[in-house]
Image 1: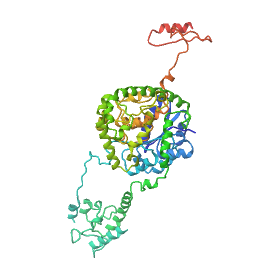
Image 2 (image 1 turned 45 degrees about the vertical axis):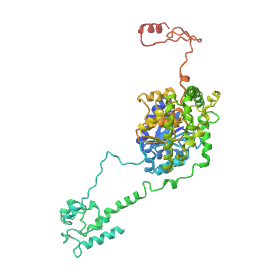
Image 3 (image 1 turned 180 degrees about the horizontal axis):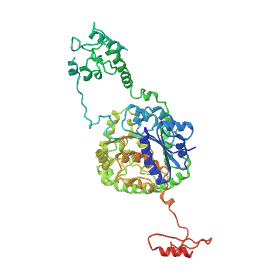
Image 4 (image 1 turned 90 degrees about the vertical axis):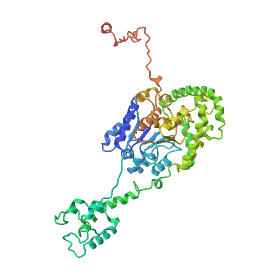
Length: 166
Length: 379
């Protein structure tokens, strides 16, 4: 059974493909293989890619990754490097249980875990507290969720003139 | 349900005594609605100018004063209300912390950390997965580490005098950590440290996240293997990457410019040159002048074997950031894959026939074709 050493979980197919592209570029330099697993595609092709020689890296969306994991098409017993990309978005999309199930299939010892997130809400903190060991936290910019300053917002009350017609 | 009833009452009261089938302009211009029940989309200017119900169309909204108003609006507003109430419970409707299974026992953490450290040394016995390639890499990386170590040692010696001043700051927590900075930076260090310590303290008070409470204390045992007194012989077997756990002036400036906050004082990696990785990966950086903030700050702890939480927007270069670290786990050392010629020959284009009498002809570009063609014809 294929047993990759690097697992990257992404919230969307687009992000997964983008990440896979970068990692494939790096893998090519080292003569290793990376595969991207996502929904909306037949599983058979992905299973074939998983069984390539020298497969080291798996990138995927939580649903399909868990699906193939449950099918026994892949094993995460040897994952030593786990990346949760855009963790806040994954939680927003309701992938929390899937993520937890996937992480539970990876070894606890010897695993280096990374988490990336655009925001730092309680839900993401909870996930980090469960699966990470004394993580080093790096914040670029502010970790407070702020409104985008480039969008101007306005509100106006419009009911008085409408009702005056009655 | 309650809302529907309330609206019905309001609607009837507005047109008391009139036939429900047709509505004419009411006596009063404006029947006050309870504010909470007002829905702007029900008061469209187009429908307001037209006598309601005359067109007999189901899709035109009834004004609030029309007796038919509640039948339509109730159906219209219900799904909206449902959606709203869902939002009120939070985006996914559950408190993830409550749902969190206790997967990591806290008392196990230090032990695991130690174990991980051992594995990062990539001693094949300690690694949970004996991998021949990885062992090979370890040898190569150790050699690299040795070199790096030596360099650091030299710098350290030179900086020692300057560091005497820094030692005065012994009460500041950061001084326990490995100090390996260029002399120029060392002079400015006390100030930077003081600032950093203050920052850390502030953060510890502010945040509720457990690990932040004692970031510096945690870092101290981790830095033990790279202490000054370590004999050179032990260097080869120690961690292949020596993270600098103090931030010098340049690092502080970098953090300030990019508005980066870090929980542990790792010196940011300000150039790609410091990356302890195989040279084969270098083409990956050819398009970039210098590491992005998230890369510069995440690499030192990553190569130190730490877990990392990065709070940054998409497109900040984090994929390459974590990708490079993932690559180093199995990166083959450059020297092993270079091809070594086995047939000694004075003329590389005309190697001597091998022991089996096989004549090998070299045909190379960048020159006239004729000699090559002749050699081929002769063979």
